[in-house]
Amino acid sequence: MIFTLRWFGPEDPVSLPALRQVPGLDGVVSALPDLPAGAVWTPGAIEARRAELAEHGFAWTVAESLPVSEAIKLGGEQRDEHVAAWCASLRNLSDAGIRTVCYNFMPVFDWIRTDFAKQLPDGSNAMAYAHAELARFDFSRGMERLAAWAQGYSGEEVAELFERARELGEERLFAHLIGFLEEVVPVAEASGVRLALHPDDPPWPIFGLPRIVHDRAGIERILEAVDSPANGLTFCTGALGAEVGNDLAAMASAFAPRVAFVHARNVRRTGERDFHEVAHHPSAGDVDLLAVLERLVAAGVDVPLRPDHGRMLWGERAIPGYGLFDRCIGLAYLQGIVAALERREGRPRPAASEPARH
Image (tube, rainbow, N blue to C red; front, top):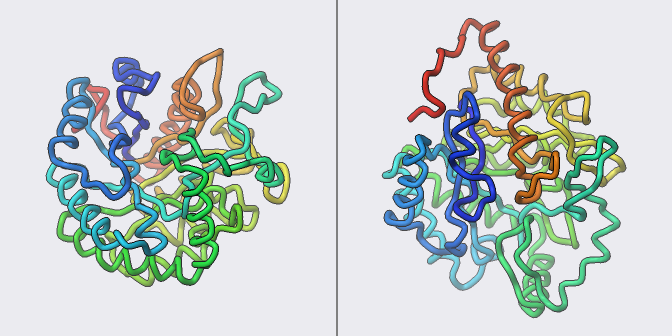
């Protein structure tokens, strides 16, 4: 596994000098959030971020996320133009040496939580989701940029997007995803890039909007429809693990050849559609990260992995879910598991003399 942490850019309260102190870090996951969905990630913008990371000794390992516009998801007038821009961005990322691209196909929203600072019994804070709490969200006056999504909308825009997405339904959304993949996967193949589709988070419909990437059957259907190693998956244990019916260990075995990126996160389910995030250790929640990693390592999966959302510890101020302290604790735990599993498989990791590999 290639161990990484996410860095949001200069606005991230966690600095690159701080990341350099993290042992065993192979690279950094980052993006260009100032560029809107549908825009080309230009060579100049990519190089500026790559050089910024390189200045501190880091490789830019994964582009997360290259946003897919609502015109692509819902079939708007600019759909073809935005697909062409997405393909151009893939080529530009490849030319800069970035060969893993994470994205999602969730209409209107990215991941969403109803509480960004739930206090846990140990005194730490974590993000939580309670399905009944969605009723308190009022988008009539617009939707501002929040931790769960990068795009802001006016009230009128939200209403229009909701109507279009609800009318679209799951089958047409699936058709739009497959049509998108049929155009972008050949570009990814030619560019040596692996696409890593992120599951829906949470893994069920919200606000009546369709969701299609949340269980084994749905993911199998997508991977089989465009059967290419370049059409890969972000195996997110938190997103998939929030659904009690998902057998994560079995899914890890089934999808191992197509896993391009791993998000390791733990959640505690508190209701049929309620959960909160917890420490990465299995005793803290309902996700058995040891079982998942055991299946992936046994299958020879060697892809970027990052500890996903963590708790906020010891008064740290950071982007919700992205405090450095708990992610580092989680990273150390994951590194220990993987090192033991790789040694058992006869593939010990070489000793590293630098904090990042290029």
